[in-house]
Length: 290
Image (tube, rainbow, N blue to C red; front, side, top):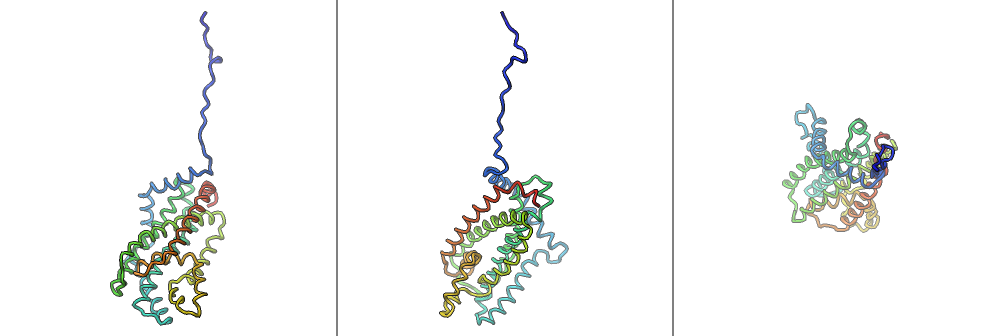
């Protein structure tokens, strides 16, 4: 005899298990980086607008970036060249190229420590990946760098240097600077949102690092002096020195010292790994900290 099946006798619905990795996961950390990269039109436009807004209503506009750089480099090159008894034809391009690279490094360090604090409103009310703000910052600093490269071109015309195929090494060298600028911004940005004393501390240390880096003084000259050669090697403890040298040497046609590249490569690996760990563990908390 047929038996009607009631609702109570039916099999229970199948339970659907949602695979949610949670706020702390490598998947979400890499997804944040990938999602931010796919939004290149957005952060590319915002980075360019940052520069335009800074020089809005100015007659020369962004050209002031190159003009201010040229004035500082010329003044410092002439002054320190006279103090150290250096040939202006070689020392001025040396100082200008060092300042060109230093401005990029300094911009990533100083602005990186406030990258999330400065974008508090966007982070709280715009559902965008955190990496978008980092990409925007690094892109803005890259535009500043490209503006200032004009000074280097002019100096190479006025004071010719023996450039060779090694000039091509400037491309991977700058790529390494961009990569390290990104992980520094992520790491210091996360730390600064939690501990607001970090940005002024970083600003103070950055000023100290400038004088410890061979920008207005020549490291090779000190090595040739037997009285200070051993003590001069202490300068290699400064990691910024290696970043400056891997880019300045090909741009000035100098012999390539490969141990600088090895040091930069090691710092890049360790730094990226540390930044990824910080992004994995604290990415979801930044919105509450800012």
